[in-house]
Image (tube, helix red, strand yellow):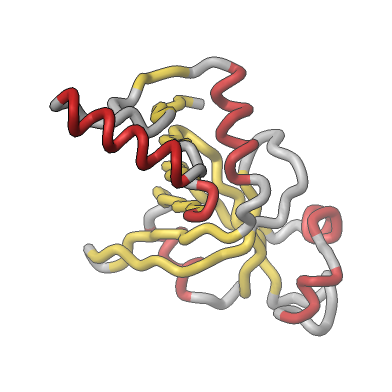
Length: 166
């Protein structure tokens, strides 16, 4: 599945369609020359610019992003065979109005004092490039593709693979 490069509006929308229901991404930062990843829940309801994540203001990831804002987000939904990586630049946002806008009661698990908790910071990830793999989910379709490829002596076509620039 060779990747094709695109920056079309439709392919940008496809990236959002793939990640909007996954909610959890592995956020990778760079720290002392080593990659450091941790799961993060996205908090926006629509994709109209950056991807948003809520964090503790005193966390290591905040320090890492302030030193080097380049990040990688990895989303995976194995049962549906959807995989997305996103390269971007993160910034720390401490605006109370934006925190209130993105707040949901589910966030109270992590921030029991609510949206006015001074320990809350937001991470805004400005997307620069995304790469996605969208393969068929039916085991029969995958098995057929493998069998056909084996007989033909070619690599199987397992779906769509694109690199999308934003």
